Length: 346
Image (spheres, one colour):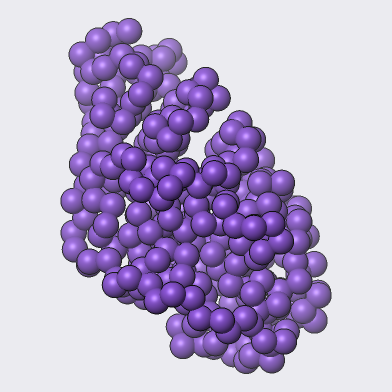
């Protein structure tokens, strides 16, 4: 079984490698005083692909981390991976390590004629806090199956089996599978990969720009029905907790906003796109989730999503003596709701 070989238009040059010119995107406000500042960058694309809003450096090379998993899944479908529904969502997942995620990964491995021993991602405890705590109480050790990328890694192995590609070295950047993924990333982002390194799970990681990442997600949500990219988008939206886990903000976000496709990534990365191609991408410089969620919600409001639908993502309250005394708030330039600003106690 051979992957599609039709060559897309040549991507633009790679984004520049430099220290990103991040700017303040969120304030940690306690009692009306700015106690901390989260730096980062934000881009909002209109349905026509033009930049409607930007903060910080949206053109510098950065690592999207797990936000690239949907594109990895697209590449594998193009190579003949026969997954749909919950298992396709799992192939693009940063899962919580719940039993459904482990069972799904085993199903993919069985279909490939393989076992957990064939996985080459790093052993880890489950990513979901509740599931991880349960594992620790039960004395269960880290495992490759529980690690949040195991679904993707099982799908990679299955893709290699289907194409008679060697399993040995399948995570090397020069392996046929990884070459196909790199070309898919370049096609969808519209730019060449600036640098290749290794992600936390052991798979190759490709650096693109924040703008390129948003463009890639928009191309997935506007693709014709039945294409590999549309299939991945549909699977992730229909099985959002398979791509993440119970109680995860990214699943809740897709549930709250009809038609939204969203994916998070380590180190404060969030990308999301609507069916008409409006898209946002966020990078929090210090990697803080407490800023990622409210900044992403504010960016979606900038993209035209009803702020009322995003109210649950305004950020967890900052407590003092067990009572709310503040919160993480998007900076004024980003916030379209006209919420209270630092220096007020409202």
